[in-house]
Length: 514
Image (tube, rainbow, N blue to C red; front, side, top):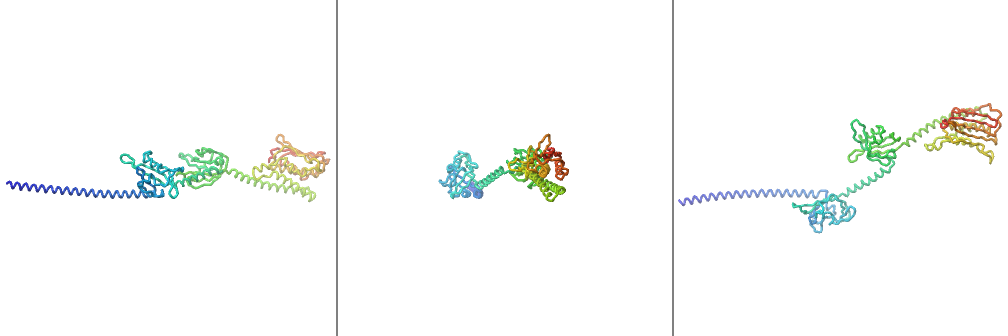
């Protein structure tokens, strides 16, 4: 019995042992499977990490920004290829002699030397400053060339907050600075031109107005020429309607068209409120994504005045030439009626034409308002000019044969012509029959103005004694009376005194200006 029990116990022990062995096998398989999973995951993680590092390295090397890192001691740990390009040299990583920067030499923008131990990287590593943002530094390469970079430095910290290193990223801004300098120079030239040109120049922008309200524009800038050309200053910040409230809608319609279409417009317009004429060129341009209008203009009022004066002169010339031909024709015709011989006809016509020429020289219009004013004739000028051939004394030492006196009175074109003809006819008559026909004869011409009327006197002395007034009245007498009555709208009084002829002409002074 005992033997059987031992056999049964042995069998049970074998079964239990077999079960435990299976458990061990199962546990071993489980451990192996777990180990295999962990190995697989680790391999995947390693591959992923390698790929991530490869991507980081590719990004680190291919970017336009130069990046390098330093250990807390300042030793350069790593740098990308862009650093090498900008430094112009390749430092050795983890080299105790390469600390804080791989640049050959560095300088502040004002030219002061920046030693490596003072390049701001030490200050970040020591915690003296938290970081560096957009600081400009000039880097000198071994070959002597220089570039400008914009530097940014940030610290690297562990989980405990301790600084373990720092990263410096810097960007080459040399070309950008050159472009900015070019722009600044261009702006300076533009500003100088803007201020010194005689032409007015301004920039304007369209302002928002309510529905139904007329459009308006605000002045953004205006040069010194603006006030010179328009007569209005201090317009910047004001709208056109505020600066020039009386101007017509046509101004705004033109600017609206330029703003809407972008087409430049050259035009002339009256600046009514200032009494000026402007020639303008308006164009659209874009400034900081905002559409604006530039206007350059010139005051052409004087030019237009000259053009008007030229047209007036042409019209006057045409009128005077027609009148001159009519007068000359009448002189020739009427002179022929009273001339006894061809020689007398020639002398009479020549004398009368010379009188007209003298009057014309004194009153002919100039080529400008100033010249015309300088050439404006006076009554004294006119009389002296016409009588100049008769004014000399008969003998050396004698007093002048003609005395002229009176206030200076301006004489217009038509009045000068008529007065010249009257004086010439009287002088011709005096030469042939009166005071100037004998050496002792004298003539005194005088005039005065009273109550708006001119009293012009011709008085002959010491000439042949006049017994009776002449009965025959030739063209000269007719011409004198016609010139006074029709030309001057005046009155003619003739006194045939025994001791000499006296002629009085009376006319309104207003007629003298015509």
